[in-house]
Image (cartoon, rainbow, N blue to C red; front, top):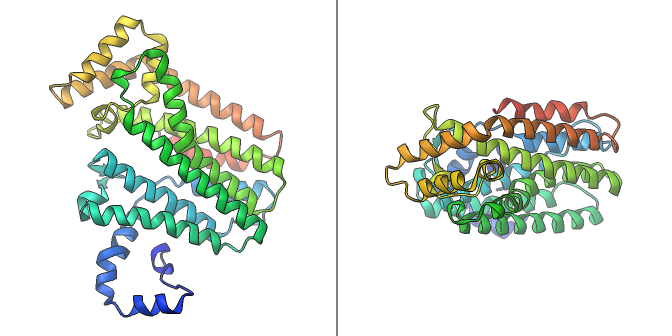
Amino acid sequence: MSIVHQSLKSPDAESLEAKQSVPKRLWNDALHHPADQFLSRCGKRIRAAMVHESFRLAGGDGDAPGQIVDAIELLHAGSLIIDDIEDDSVERRGQPTLHREIGMPLALNTGNWMYFRSLEKLGDAGCDPSSSHQILIKVIRTVRRCHEGQALDLAASVDLLQPSEIRPTVLAISRLKTGGLTALSSWLGATAANDGRMVRKALWRFGMNVGVCLQMRNDLNELRGLFNCEERFDDLRNARVTWPWAWAAKIMSKTEFNKLQHQLRNAINGEEDFRWVARKLIDAVGKRGNLYINAKLKQELTLLGEHVDSTKPMRIALAKLHESR
C-alpha cells in the first residue's frame, strides 16, 4: 500500500466517513494519483538510506521504523514540488514537473499536504512520548529553516552580489535547506534507536555536512547537464547563488568574474548564453568542486568514526552520492 493510500485510515470516525462518502475517482484526481505518481519517480533516496544507517549505527536492530522513513520521503517530495513551482521548473527526475502536469493549484496543495502528512507519520512511529515531543519540535524547526533558506535562495541574485558575498550566502542556503533535511534524516534514525545525545549530535553534524555536499554535487550536475541534452536551466535562468559561483569567485580575477556575471545578467540569447556561462564555470571549477566534495565527505566520515563503532554502512549509503557525478 502506498504512503498516500495509508493516509486515508484516519482514526477520526467523522473525518473517515466524510472521505468515504466522496466518489473514489474524485479523490484519485484530486490527490491520490498526483501524489503517488510523484512519489514513485526514481530518486537516489539518500535521505531514506541515512535514516536506516543512522538507526543501525545508533544501536537499532534492522531497519528504522517505516513511518519515519516515509515521513522523510514525504517532506522531501513536498519540498521538491514547491521548489519546482517557485522556480517554474519544466522537468523533475526525467518527467514534467507536477505543476505542469496537473496545474499549479493542485500541485501546490499536494506539496503542502505532504508536509502535514509527514508530521502525522512521525506521530504514528511508536516512539516514547518524550522522544515524540522532541521529534515534533525538531521537525517543525527544520521545516521552518528550510523555508527561510528558500526565501534567501529566491531573493538573492548571483549576478548582483559582490564576490565576497557569494560563499556565505550559498553556505547559508545549503545548510538551511538541503543540509537541514539531511541532518534531520540522520538524527531521526539515531533518535528512533534511543541512543545518547552525543551520538545523535554527531549524526546531525554528519547529515548536515553530507547535505551540503549533496547540494554541491547537484549544483555541478545541473551545469554539466547542459552539455548532455538535459535542458534544465533553472539555476542560471533564475540567477541562483550556487557553489560553482562561490568557487569561481575565489579563484577568478575580479575582471573575469564580473564578465561572467554580466553575461548572465544580459543573457539575451537564452540557452546559448546559459551554456557559455556554464562552460566557463565548469572549466574553472568542475575538478576543484569534485575534489572538495570527496575530501569533505572523507573528513566527515572520519569525524563520525569517533562516535560510532563502524562507518562502513554509511560509506555504502553515500556511494549513491559519489555515483551522481
